[in-house]
Image 1 (cartoon, rainbow, N blue to C red):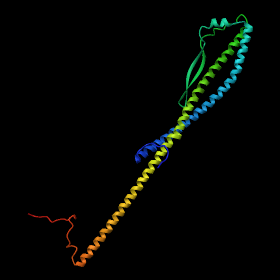
Image 2 (image 1 turned 90 degrees about the vertical axis):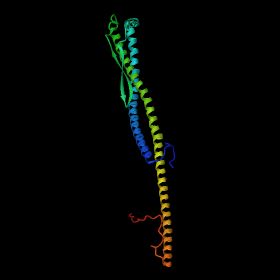
Image 3 (image 1 turned 120 degrees about the vertical axis):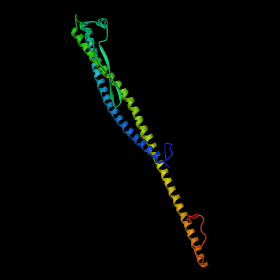
Image 4 (image 1 turned 180 degrees about the horizontal axis):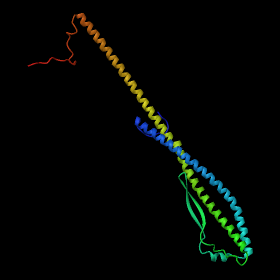
Length: 252
C-alpha cells in the first residue's frame, strides 16, 4: 500500500487518470509560482539597493538643507512669518501610479509642482540669492523623500507578496504534490493487486475445469470400456435428456 498522506478515493482507472491530471496541474502551478517568486525577489533586491542608495544620499542632502537654512536665516533674517503668510495652498502635489510586477500591484509616488512660485519675492530686500538656494535645496530634499517613500512602500508590498508566494510554493511542493503522488501510487498498487487476484482466480478456475474434464474423460473411458466388454454399442445406449437432438417433422 502507498504510505503517507493521500486523497481518500476509490481506486479505479478513471480516478487514476483524474489524479494524474491533478498532479500535472499542481506541478504546472508550482512552476509558475516559482517563477513569480523569483521575479518578485529580483525586484525586491533592486528596490532594497535603491533604498540604501537613497538613504545615503538623503543624509548628505538633509545636511545641505540645514546649512542652507542657517545661511538664509543669517543673510535674510527670520523669514518664517513670510513663508507662513504666503502658504495659501500646497504647490507640490503627489501623484499615485501603479506598477504591475508578476501580478503584484506596486504603488509609486511622483511629485509635481502646480501654480506659480509664491516665494519668488521672499528675500527681495536682502539675502535673495541665499533664500533661493535654500528653497532649491529643500525642493530637492522633498523630491528625494517622496522617492524614498515610494521605494519603502514597494519594499513592504514586495516583502508580503514574497512571503505569501513562498508559502504557496512550499505548500504545493511539500503537501499537495506528495499527496497526489501517494494517491497515484496507492491506486496503482491496488489495481495491480486486483489484477493479481483476478489472474489467480482465473488460474484456479482453469485448474478446476481441467480436473473436471479429466474426471469426465476418465468416466467416459470407463463407461466405454464397460460397454465394449458387455457387447452393447454406444449408439444403443440411452440418450441424455439434456442433449439437443433434432426430431423429424410430423405430418398430419
